[in-house]
Length: 263
Image (cartoon, rainbow, N blue to C red):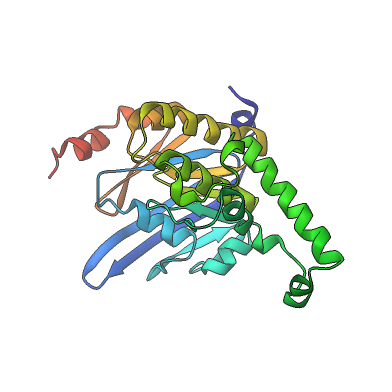
């Protein structure tokens, strides 16, 4: 067991009886679960189960009609995106959302924007404290580049990179914000076996070395079972299981949902 696994702590974020609907379509129905400090939580389920909707609720893109979110001890009906970012929630997206004409380094630097304290005038003058601040943030970005082993592409426009490396750059941008809670929406979608192995290693290293709490959506059950501390299963917007990988693997409701037996 790794050091990070041994120090899984108290609840960092809790969702209570969350209901989310779009018109007559109910995306989430009375969903409750918690995310604990330093753990890797996988959210799984068949297509259309409500997984991405759940991440969008957590970081404020969607606002549930009912239910509450408690994050770092503060309870609120909904989380707004700027509040989520300012209080330590970062995410990657199912469809890569990078600035394709910008270099790897510059994309990762955008993840430092919330950490910058000098106002626009200082930045425009690019003098004194503004220069020192940018140097500090650039050093932080370079450390992430070293961590993710992408030194050779630091000056390459990300639009020229293969898909797997773009996914790694997007992870780097999220890490640049120094999140307490990192949300990963299908971080390994579209990757080959070697790329998946690399991404698994980096996710585990983020948890072990930085102590970052991670919630991820992933369809590859081998990956889920290998790297997750706990698994939450959604089906048709409802939570049908919550437990360790071994507990979920043998859950009859989960097996039925994936095989379509119940429907």
